[in-house]
Image (tube, rainbow over all chains, first blue to last red; front, side):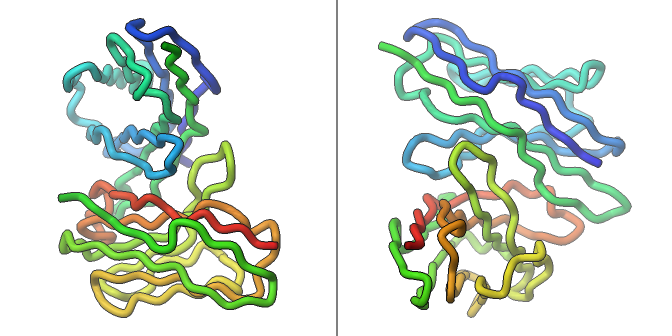
Length: 117
Length: 116
């Protein structure tokens, strides 16, 4: 069964600090996809990134970067020079691709990030 | 454009009321989803529609009744709800929901439902 663990329930940083959100996953499949979503207080889940299991290249998008390591089953997310607008709940999610048909999107429990001015 | 819209934004209803939540997307996506999210919890999948047909029902009580009138619209009809059904209801869509259901799901802003 697939599982996603976000051990950090809440993180609080001061503006301009860097912060890393951890995500550890479990899956028996060799083909799977990992996602990060941001949920601000307004409620909408905003898609940030999708990464498949065959692509271990790290990715950078502006102040955001992602570190995917299959050896440790982790897909961590770093925000550089954090801003107050980054305050939100961040969800890591996983979906497997088994026997030719994909399974459901499994979410981690989420990490509440608060960036203080 | 990756926009999914939902109406209403907020809804308060009594346990004997009948109401509907609406979701719309114009991205040409053929899969649409309803999720329920309680405070400080991740979203929980309720229903999946693929090509306008119900493909997944996660053992949701019959007081929730989904409907997909066309490929752009998804409704959730509510009847005889309980106070514990109060939650944020999120709609999402993706390009497909079959063998390629690893397609990214794009979410709407949600409807905050309160059942009195």
